[in-house]
Image 1: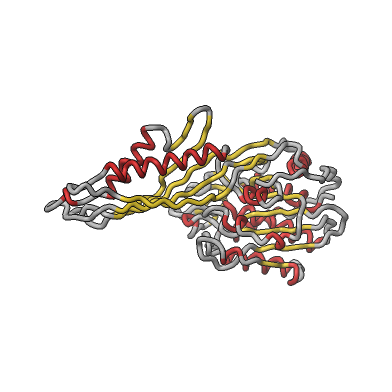
Image 2: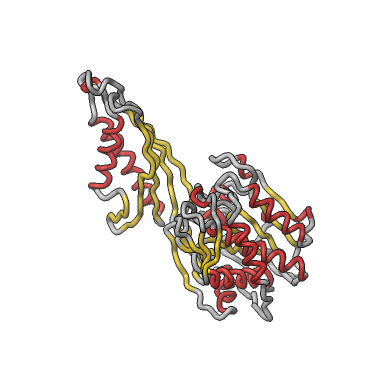
Length: 406
């Protein structure tokens, strides 16, 4: 992760803050949550945002996209979307960001308000508040600024694609799209008063096992079961404390085998199995050790399973870093300014570190320290997902303050 000393002083004040139109903000988030738009299929969501920006008076030249989707593992319909506005006040350019995509379970969302929460009326779908609520916070702030001609510093609002499959939009960002901001505020899940100042790093593994096929009834001894190899390896990792919640030598991390596929018939010794796994830790050295333990466990298991002729299995492992960990100091300007914005609405900020990844991981790696705020989303990635309306409204108020304070 790049290290640099910031020259920015947190002199931003929140004098005479502007209040957003919360009825419009709620309408925007309800309509956004109803739009399908899982990872790689964000075009309809982007079209909605672009139309509302145009309707609010945004010049066509101020709306830009990059080609991040041409470099991501998942084929995409468009790259990252940005609105860039020159400032009416002299101050460092600032970035507000959120991600466009949802997880697949949210396709089919039917948002319905019940009291102070919104849920999906479709019992088989999540709500999609993660992260259409963040999209709405940015969009509503932009509409306020454009239609009311509010004073503001140089400003970039960016909606990232493909966050849910490994932060790939922000990872493959064309940095010039952001127009060189110096302060960054990312909106994602959780409480708007929780400032995520640090996040874990994540590494993904694709493990392919090759055995030897044979008739499971007529000649099982001639086969080398890829399923047996996979089973032994996972059991080894579990038994020795390298799968799940991991604590070794005072270090902490997590790992998971989350996908396994192989075999088509019970009367065939399965010769091919594919697994997908991950390892996470705030300590990059310890995360690499977790990965090494995975590699060693699967290679031991491959050697252990042999057929009558002494032939054993083979294992191929490919890995890639999803995102590196980061930790901001409480004195980082973006953290202090976000603290002030939260206090300006009568709330108290809480600093937090997460074991998940956020777009701020890659923003920080790109040399732009970013603090992350929530928008009232609860139970993300579940059919029980909710949006707390009061917390969403608080996020809209905070977002407008961060976009307009000078």
